[in-house]
Image 1 (cartoon, rainbow over the protein chains, first blue to last red):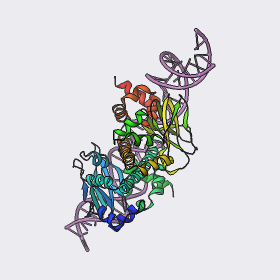
Image 2: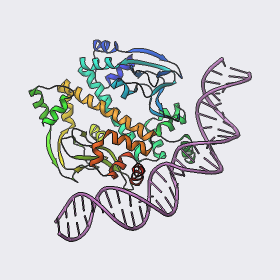
Image 3: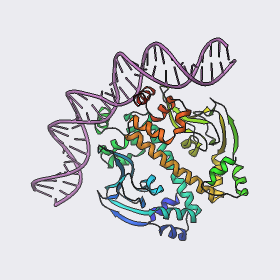
Image 4: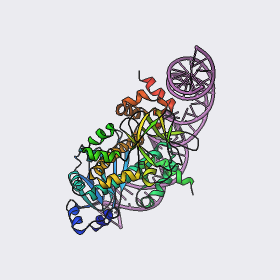
Amino acid sequence: MDRLRSHIEQITSLSNDEFEYVKSFFVLKKVRKHQYLLHEGDEVRHEFFVLSGVYKVFYTDELGREFIVQFAQENWWMSDYPAFFTQQKATTYIECIEQGEVLSSTLQGREQLAADMHKMEHFFRQKLTNGYMAQQQRIKLLLSSTPQERYEEFARLYPSLIQRIPKKLIAEYLGVSRETLSRLYAGNK
Amino acid sequence: MDRLRSHIEQITSLSNDEFEYVKSFFVLKKVRKHQYLLHEGDEVRHEFFVLSGVYKVFYTDELGREFIVQFAQENWWMSDYPAFFTQQKATTYIECIEQGEVLSSTLQGREQLAADMHKMEHFFRQKLTNGYMAQQQRIKLLLSSTPQERYEEFARLYPSLIQRIPKKLIAEYLGVSRETLSRLYAGNK
DNA sequence: ACTGAAGTGTGATGTGCGTCACACTTTTTT
DNA sequence: AAAAAAGTGTGACGCACATCACACTTCAGT
C-alpha cells in the first residue's frame, strides 16, 4: 500500500489519517499470468492500481483480431474506463501478461473519495489530465505517423515495455501487423 | 455568459455569488471566419469555451498535410491541451470555420477555480472524464475500423457537424483521404 | 454582380502494408 | 526432460486506399 501512498503524494500530500481513509477503499489482489481481471460483457465493477506485473487492456473484432487499448505496469491505473465510468458492460478484456499484484477500487469508492476529500478530487483530475494528454498524443500518432514513427515513439515513451512484452503485442497497440513491425527494425540494424 | 452557467450546472449547481466568481475568470471574444485563435509555436495562454460558431483544432506535417485533432461547437471546450496544461509551445492551430463567440480563460484561472471551489474541481474532473472516454473511443476506431465504419460513427455522434462543415475536414479528422471518403457514400445511395 | 477561391466527384495509377504460409527458436507447462 | 505453446523472421501475393489529375459547382470577398 505504501506504493499507492507515494503515488498519490506525487500530486498532493496526505496525513496519516487521510491515507488510512483512502486505503480503506482499496483491496489487494494477487494476479497470475494469463488470468483475466475483466472479461468482455462483464459488469465493470473495478478499476485497478498496479503494484507489480504487466497487464494488457484489449478487445477483439468479429474476425478475432486483437487490439490493445492500453498496457499497464507499476503505478499505472487501468480499467475499461468508458464502461467503468458509465457503469455499462465491458467491451474489453484485461489480462495479466506478467504476474503481480493490484489494488482494486470501485466507482463508488472513487466518487466518494473525490466528494469527501477535495485533495483526492484534485488527484483524480490531475491523473485524468495526464491520461487525456497521452491519449491525444496517441491519436495524433495514429492519424499521421508511419508505422516506423509509431514504433520509435513507443520505444521512446515506454522503453521498459519494449523489453518486457512480445513484439506481437506492441504491434497490436500500434495498429500495425506483426510482420510489418518485424520488417521495420530488421531494416534498422 | 448564461450559457456557461447552465453548462456548468449540468454537473453541479452554483449560487449567484459562486457564478459571479467563476465568471470573473472568463473573457468574451468575438471570432470571425478564418481567424486563428492559436498558431503553432505560440504560447498557449488560453483555453476556450465555445458560445457559438464552429472551430477546428489541427496540425500539419512536413508535407503540409492537415490533420484535425478536434472540432468544437456550442458548449465545447477547446485548446491545444497538451501544450496548455504543460505550458509549452503550441503544436496545433485553432481556426474558426464559422464565425461566433468564445469565452477564454487561462491555466492559472482554471487552477485557481479548481483550488478555491471544490465544486469546480469536480466539474473539471467530470469534463475530463468525458473527454477521456471520447478519446478512447476514437483510438479504438482508428485502430480497428474501416473508413466506412469511422464515417458512420462520426455521423452518428455528430450529425450536426456533418451538415455544417466541408467533407474534406471530416476526412482530415477520420484519417482518410478526401477522395476515399467521397467514394464511400457515393456507393451508399 | 463579378471573380477567384474553395468544395466536391470521379477516373487512372501506384504502393505500403495486410494476409497467408512456413521454418526456426524460445518459453512455458506438466 | 519432454511436449506443447507462443514468439519471431521472412518470402510471395494482392488489394484497399493514397495520390495525382481534371472538370464542374458552390461559396465568399470586393
